[in-house]
Image (tube, rainbow, N blue to C red):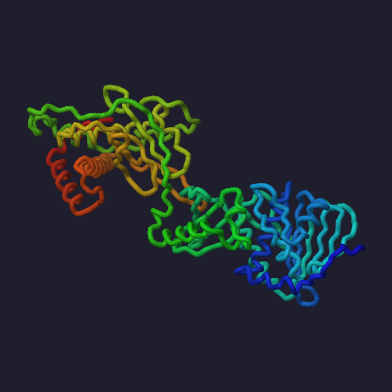
Length: 489
């Protein structure tokens, strides 16, 4: 064995003060050990053993099967104070302080990578040449007994991770498949996801590896904050927190989650699919009275209100690929009308929401929605043109909005179902008579928002809004026969 040339010998006591730089240096130690392995090219297996030796001290061995470190990387980067082995945007480290936490602060350590064997204590080490080994194996002897605590920390590290390889703790395979879950929001520097794996925590990760955890007041949801690459300009040197201004943004998110979860998790930039065409417009004769122009046989309405059986709704909805934009035909005369899909969920839009591959359910729903709005516009003698469409949103039944002077009525046809790590869509309406009356009530709700907009009134759900909606619903009940077309298949 040969001694490396050191101008000044620095023992482990010098590096022990680094513990003060971490909220929990033992958790940070395991995180650094795992991330170094997972960052190494070709790593598929990470082996971690934690045990107590005869002196009552904890011995930790961590090994990976990735490419071994070259001599240049080992001596000029990893074992050089302030150096770093991380040179690409998709690697996690880069601050050059991990080696103090992993090796220099402990009683002693050995590193076997390729055909190089390092044995050291503090910044002092010897170098030897040994039989070639794939990957890198490092053994560290702690100055005290932390075995049980480190085993618990390693289990949590695995539970909070999403890594494609195998993580073995004391020769037992751990699960490292905490999926991000449902996309919620893009902060620009990180993406926000939620799942139902662990309630009340927020995990900051990069490339699926947890950096640190914060508490939240969401008892049933786990929030995943995945940092965008490069992450080195966002993480603090100890990787226990974020640099400014990202730390401010993260703290603001935690506060928002406590005050208003829906707003905190709402995607600020919805995705639109626009299918251009004509606008819908209610036609009526000004000279006719309301009762005259709405004279439809009430018995026909009641007959049409009979329950529609589930068999009448197409269940096998297509799920093939997307297609080119075209126009929508939802009314009886088959004219081409504008149609919009507004997606705030971040999920893939189901293909059966697109006009050329409409399912029977969506076609019937959009026809009911359009006919309900036309009937209300006729009743209120409102000739304002409008477009209709589908809204994919986790919180709202429908929405009225104005874009380039065009009023849009968007109805939410699907419910979001949340499972452990994913969200999926299911039908919101059965299109029975009861549900069609619900759709009519929703149309009335959104018509009031149109009324507020064109009259420059507050669009909030104020007492004024409630009064307007009550008055409209009274008119609709008195003229319920106007909705006959909503109940025709």
